[in-house]
Length: 370
Image 1 (tube, rainbow, N blue to C red):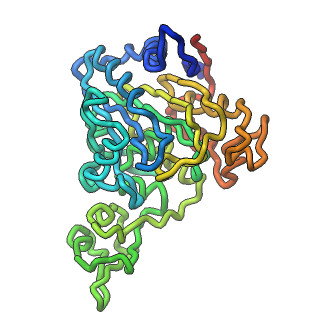
Image 2 (cartoon, rainbow, N blue to C red):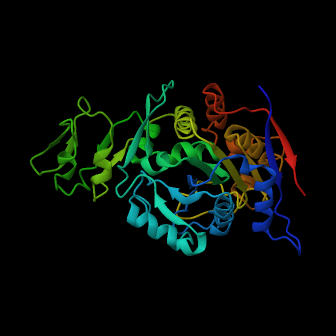
Image 3 (cartoon, rainbow, N blue to C red):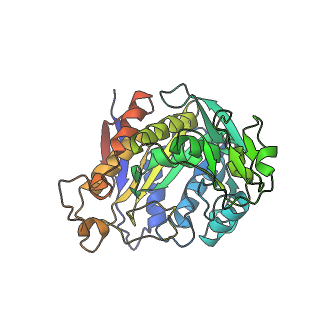
């Protein structure tokens, strides 16, 4: 397979070029303009960050991408899908508030913010995949309605997948709440009866009669009838319904790759990775520990596999910061930092599955810009 081009530049600014300008130059060098965006809806997928976390990407970077799309005649919007866990991004109202708190709003971005899977995380498109693990992916409808998808991701370590990069931003990030449940577990939720408000809303939204009630009116799920659609998760206002999170990290990573295929297949896609404030955990945490290595740089490519592999190699080439969790763990040059800090993870599983599904290549040319 032909090597993919991955463009890279560091975070060194000058008196004549600031970092947003440098990012714009990177996108131009990577030839993002090859995509026909004229009068097309362009979804810019990113992670707004859980409020309290300060490692997430600043909206200034997204503004650069928005402006580049607009110059090419596109109609951009910035998007993310609701979370499965009960944080401040589990429904569209709270999610938008979180985005605004963290600086993502039409004034700073120059475009609108849309939550990809709707108010309760149930507005989804069913996308045939035919993979080893996923037959039909559940993707946020607004994401699938777009003509072009651009991934703008914050590269960081992750406690379940080793790291979060382009593939995870697209695969896990674009899944509806039911889609996220499918990736995280065997496909069936469970009800915490201590939290159940006995309102009956879950049963009224279950098309398969899988929910029953005990003498106290508390709900329970019949696993023999449940098809794992996840609608009960979206409609529960008490956060009593959740996924079991019982998949192995390897299967989780492979499912993410197959979900990323559902998002990218059949339409133009482009990928931007910013490896800075490289925190030890996901931006879904409402806190962030100090970075584990120094800031690395900005990358851009048409290949989500190649850009993930390149970013991982660049991070592994750094020396861990002594006062970080990675440094305190005794990690040093020559090690794989992602498994050193999170030994139950295997980021290569996602990469190998993505290659098997034809999403991209691990072979790349790293083209460095000054």
